[in-house]
Image (cartoon, rainbow, N blue to C red; front, side, top):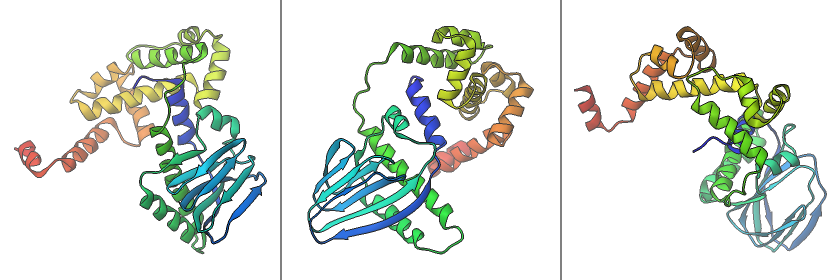
Length: 291
């Protein structure tokens, strides 16, 4: 996959997603209901287990169907009109870093059909039980369960995503910057060169890059170099010094940055990856590998 501003931006936002779960519950209705709920300061992640009807999120109206999840952003009007024998799960959470402009920019839809319904039901059941527990680790568990549930929702959304719209000229320039970085990791990369590709003044480019990617251009380049080094360490038997040259770093600097970012030296990382590969091999291949 070619590097793109959208992919990097989306990855950065997901990597830094933090939220506080305020409610998790199972709801069962044995009568028709048509409620209009005012906007709240929290998000809803809503899953329909059984029933029919419609749900309005902002100005959009969607059919209610079993096996479907709905994301109701904070500050958005939410209306529910369902028939009797309606069953659903809902969890409420707050996130200071996310808002409607960000959700729109990330192109996260309000609705997604889930393939593995049993897995989602099990996650919600676990969240409801945790929410009612008095364990000192309750909030820690809830955050982890929300992350897992939200990951299922996002994965489902991305699999169902429509063909992306054509890029604007600004997006094309940014994607050219990212492609240039990945194809020139073996040599010095100057901010001035990147700014020129983006058609921006270097000072403004640095500011805009940090706002968009969550780090400075230099930090981003270093991260990409380390990522490339990880791939080479796992997939080849090249000496660390050769790998350092291929990713544009001095040997000692690669080792220092690698240890700082990964927590292991390059050689320790390679041994770990080799051990993981051996464990994943079928027994016959493992015997052949050992000799």
